[in-house]
Length: 161
Image 1 (cartoon, one colour):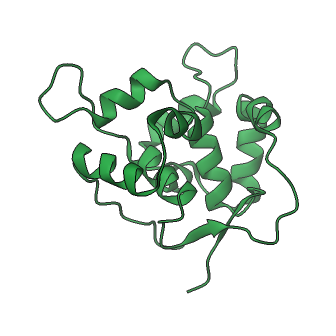
Image 2 (cartoon, helix red, strand yellow):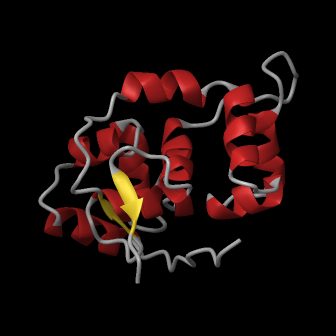
């Protein structure tokens, strides 16, 4: 497996600056990252303020990809398709499909978890059968990031350096 991109997470002020420089509203960014506006606001709140949370590594990386600031991924200019998010949502919540995608990529669970900046335990909960007590559906943003990193996303492709 190739080296995983190591993120240096910025302070909330820098994330707000990145969003502003991209010319996006908070509502647009929340939709882009598949989170509520209140969740995004917690990520953008100054450290130490009530309810403030650090933006997850995967969410920050997905933001960089979608605004064209990631060093390794860009929008595929040759793509004729438009992304149908409903199709991805249907696939995303299927542990069987997720296991199949990981297997097709030749990744172990640990490698797939590392690509998404997660613990193996958290990733394994997404792979558990839906009837299992510890099953959790994969968040749409994480699934989309996985598709991008495995070069299976219709809109974003890895850039050859």
